[in-house]
Image (cartoon, rainbow, N blue to C red; front, side, top):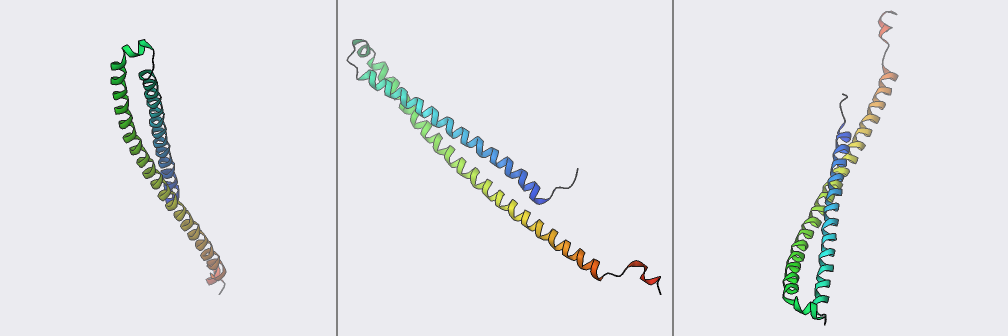
Length: 136
């Protein structure tokens, strides 16, 4: 296998880091979806508690317990969502730094290749042929 340049290695790392960023985005989106579901359930329980229907009044204690569990779960999901947001920011920052390093390495490699090409031209212009000693 051919030796990889620094920019190629960093490009591969950037791709992996961007994938980790996408995973963090997915986790955040999933947590947000779960919070929406919990909030919808809480609204349904509140509606049932406020209902004048005699069936709902019979289950008012169950509804109150359910609402308490849902609000606890919402608090937990809020904390988890904050953690996912921080993780997403961290992964995005890592990816941006790696991408910046990759661009710098690529520029450095291009500059080095250009310098090498200039030196090759200078060597060709001023170098004496190997057969010059034989011409004497």
